[in-house]
Length: 323
Ligand code: UDP
Ligand code: MG
Image (tube, rainbow, N blue to C red; front, top):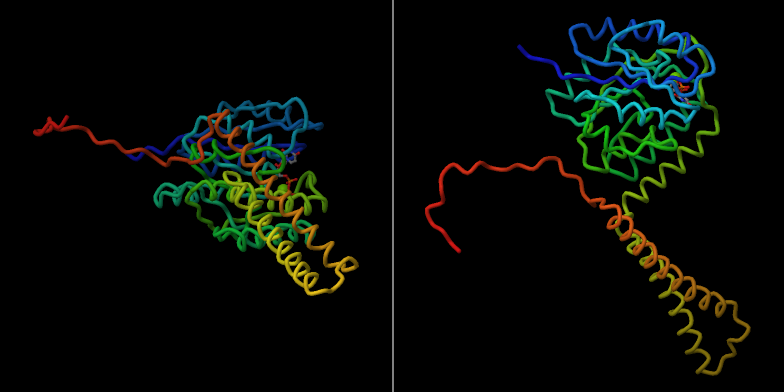
């Protein structure tokens, strides 16, 4: 008999008292026959969310209560750290994602061997203010990395435990789980999933997230591309500026030698400035490069991620012994 893997459902909840009961019911119905745990992370709710979860008295539920409201990313991180499943499934606690999609996503992940399967919300039921930042972010991701993602913000994801546990989750990084995983070499695919309008409770985000999303995105792309060799970025900019400055000043020197007066030329100022700024950039490159070395070497971080290591059993003694 095919034994399904143990699943960990990670659900951050912040003031979702009207939803937890219905969500648990929906999960129980759609995951019949599966072995799973539902990890609710109560992210400092000020309503009856915690009480409602305790009232469910369900042995499949693990409730992690955070000391205060830390935000969705940290809540997810707290849940993933305690997850015991070999597959980790993240979803929102507000019933906007539909647990009936989980089985289909899991099957795709297992049979097609994806590290991460993420949803594309069909007929997304959110306001324009909510969808605009996502559209910009998805566009920047598509243009600046080779990850073709249509809906990075979809919370419903199925991933292997190994993938989930190696993704950095702090600040607002939950929106970039797929991007971070992709940049670490995970195999990712997208599938259409259902999306519903919120019935109970309110969305926790406003327009302010647009700028956060874009800042985070630029930082991630910068980090992943240049974290190991910042000198390549700063050094190249420095070199271009320095050479332009040098070119300008050599030109001025030549016309000075030919008898022109260059003391009142704004170009002289520009040339000198470019040379100085160029040197500055180069030095910043060297300093950040040294910083990165300390980062990798002192914390024993590896600059690579291994998918697996394959070894072969020795079946017979080698006939020729070379020493
Ligand atoms: N959430 C959380 N902590 C927060 C904000 C949100 O745990 O500080 C949870 C929230 O309860 C929900 C999920 O994260 O389960 C997504 O939040 P929301 O529905 O407000 O976001 P939206 O759907 O508007 O993007
Ligand atoms: Mg929501």
